[in-house]
Image (cartoon, rainbow, N blue to C red):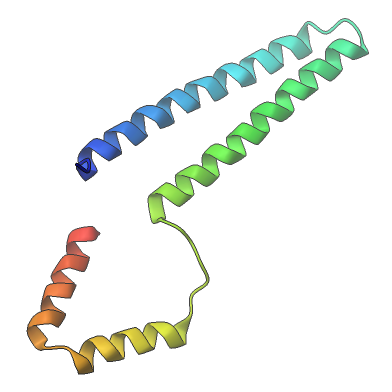
Length: 107
């Protein structure tokens, strides 16, 4: 049985907050290591941790973008026009209106 959208949204929010908290901890660790560095090896370790934090921040941002808007692809005007022409000319008014109501429900 599939989960309802509200449950999926709550799970996503919980996971996002958890990842955000881990990211903040990783950033703080990188700063502390950099401040307490005594030699070049310690500085290199701190920079490696900072690079990991930056990489994780980029991944988190990409995940948020893909979850919010769905999978992204290039916009193809010809295919979009073709889809709407088929919808307008080959289906009944009732079907068209039900599709519009369904589309409004999704957004």
